[in-house]
Image (cartoon, rainbow over all chains, first blue to last red; front, side):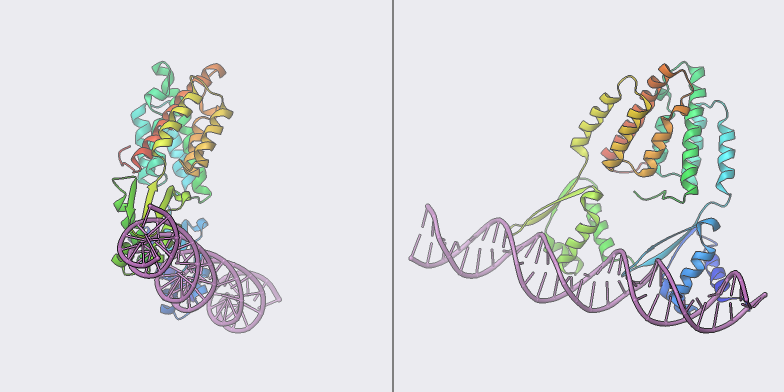
Length: 161
Length: 161
DNA sequence: CTCTTTTGACTTTCTCTGACTATTCTATCG
DNA sequence: CGATAGAATAGTCAGAGAAAGTCAAAAGAG
């Protein structure tokens, strides 16, 4: 018979089919499966780690919870190289903004971060003749992209201040 | 289930949407939520501390009150111009990093945001002869600073990028 | 036997309350 | 008028209760 851990893993993944993020009570779940609460931690540690593409947040005390967040499907390295390719040697302002928007949509950056990036590639940030502007903008954006994905790899926070 | 503390926090923040400063009666608020008055202190201590960007003033006795002040408006309007001045027409990488660090210390930006800013003004982001680099870096940093303080003033995130 | 799973005792964190303390205002007394 | 007692506030702190986390030892699978 499949191990309890496998069953719990499947249960959680079923719950997450719809939403990329769910919240649950550790004790309730443990009770549901008639196991020790720490069993839930075991499942989370072995099947929902960052390596597996998940991030766990939790809170203790009254009203505590465990939140499981599924990170993006594609390995980020992939998206990064895609975006870097799209940036290329030079890029105009509109295209740069589109890329930043995409990062925001994917929740890879917060609104504030997106606005910051936006301001770094704006026309007036690059005080140069137009042709050079696009080259420069590409360089700045490339750097920022790499920074964003460095954060992702390290599993750092994207949301909360 | 949202905890009482979360509910009270939200209630207060809603009250503060318009004004950066509100005044309330501890006992009334406690009564409104049917909790012990000291619960209000707990919420203030855990969600409206200086770290969170708020200052609490209060007075006991008849006509007592609790005043909650959101920091950042006045002094920072000043700080922005100070920093812009410090950036000037051109700026080297080390100085730029110091300014970004200061923003982080003041909690005006998150760690991620600071890293992003850092990456935008790095040497390799500005593919130009050194003299021009500093001019360019100043322009990019100026733009980002203005963005940071725009957020602060509104205290809110706008969604268009 | 070795590796994974499961459990349970112990720890840490968060919330909430109540008893006690401190401060401020107001009314009354001398 | 000033002193003072009492009422009206708010603050502090320790403790109870409610989660979740940790870790090592026992149990089970292959």
